[in-house]
Length: 468
Image (cartoon, rainbow, N blue to C red; front, side, top):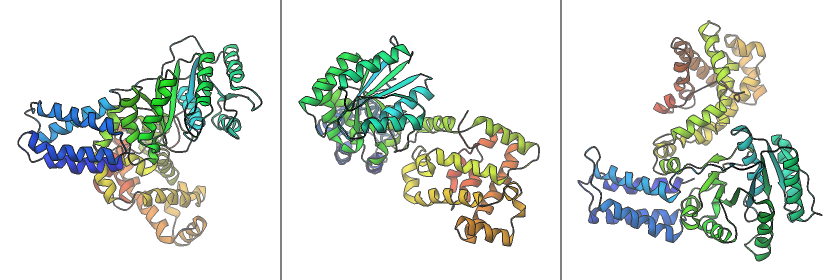
């Protein structure tokens, strides 16, 4: 998300870098470029006008700090305005009521409501430790009820059975009664969508709202619909007392117009953002972090949080102890490192969170490293347990057998072993400085994947698997 906007704004803001001070004359062209960049990102026109006017007003009245250049000062103003436009700060989910706290999801058909229900349930269960019940009140879309049931089985989250023979209002009453009787802390209700906003749809969801009296009413919207997302959100906000927005499929939108438009037009905060089709927890929406990504400043806080939720700290500590006691770093340990990187979204996902990612992405073909991670894991899986624990055994004929078993070339096996040797030596050195130092030893890992230069030291390897 925001790839195009980031590239355009970075080129634009460089124009001010050599200026001695900010004047109306020298920011005129820059503001015009900012306006064009936002329009190309599919940001709603009223939002663009307000955004540019506020920046101009603040920039011309701004005293440049002695420690900053005019270009840096202008970027600081743009950053602050981006944060303000997207809501100013994170709006946390509100569950402060007598259980069950009801969360009602509304939106158009195809926006991703059902998937978002499961992702939201995962977030509430795994991160907030809540007992969650889901129910589908969508009696129109074929297989909608079965889809939620399947997601419930996949995530091991309870789903109250419902049927297309029932009225949505009766489903809502039964779900509320069931949640109270069995002491669920949160009830998530998935509602029917339509291909467009219509009176029948709005009347039904208003009835459900009246029956359930939800503490949170979220409008679920597809980020790829751009400024149309903001206009549809406005229509729903006029019909329902919305408390927030869930922005779905955000990773499939290179423009980002919806994220910059929804809050300004509806007055409702974006509370969560959905990335990818995999059923992983929704991510809370942090305007300041998104603004940092847009301006290519990175998002290290999100990277750290992702690492903390993905990495198995206990496994990393065991690995540190193992190496320190002289048992060495074997290929099974190495495979764990590769899996951790894949669980964190692969190299491409991690790159976007690093400062200067736009410049690095231009020079690095991220598709190949993702393929390489999977290829390397396949090679390790093709080895015998003894070979994984004692890599020194892997010589000529064994290499050929492993390459054939993994469906790769002998070159790939040699590349893996070279990469393993580099990281193994790095791990031995790092172990003398303890676990903390070990976490920073990714240079060898990235160096063996085609020469990623100085970014290797920024990617922390840890034990694979999820934290228990």
